[in-house]
Amino acid sequence: MFRWYQAKLTQRPVVTQVITTAFLFGAGDITAQQAVDRRGVADHDFPRTLRMTAWGGCFFGPVAVQWYKLLGRISFPGHPNRELLARVAADQILFTPVNLLCFFTGMTLLEGGNPKDKLEKSYLTTLRNNWMLWPTVQLVNFKFVPLEHRLLVVNVVSLGWNSYLSYANTRK
Image 1 (tube, rainbow, N blue to C red):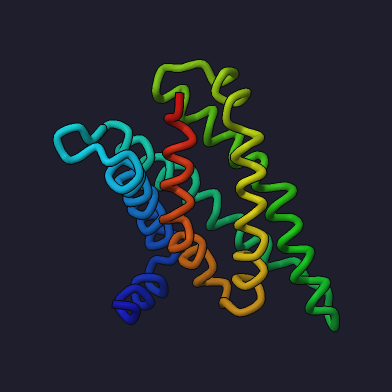
Image 2 (image 1 turned 60 degrees about the horizontal axis):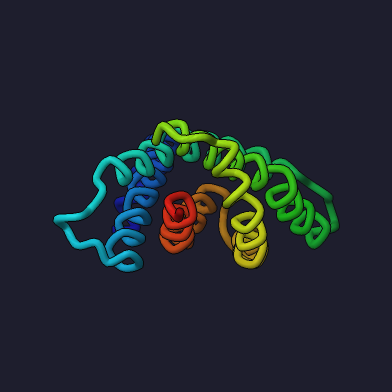
């Protein structure tokens, strides 16, 4: 399976990463609905899963592909630890707050709701929870994973994170 993915990544890197991201955003929502909320198939909110899948494929995936390319260009020759910390800091201080703002605003608009209310209720808590998980993930990711596989690592960890995001986005 990994060889097949690697071949697709070599042939069409952006498309492969975007499709993978869309799939895993949808899978995260399914996990949130079935494992966390225990809705069952009859009560599954398929439009919600479609919104999460679309968000992953149409927004986060394309943006993240370019973001990781940009982070890969941060360079401090002879100072690999400084380079690593700069990438993680940029990811967590610049990208994450904007990404979460876009996520909650976009998802709420797709649901027909009020983004201001959603942001007041969920944004800061989600941002704090992000900072408990992602800096460590990104330290490992940027230190040991080649650029072309970094989004895949993020996507795999995101199965759990996207379940949380889906839950955070729909809590009353």
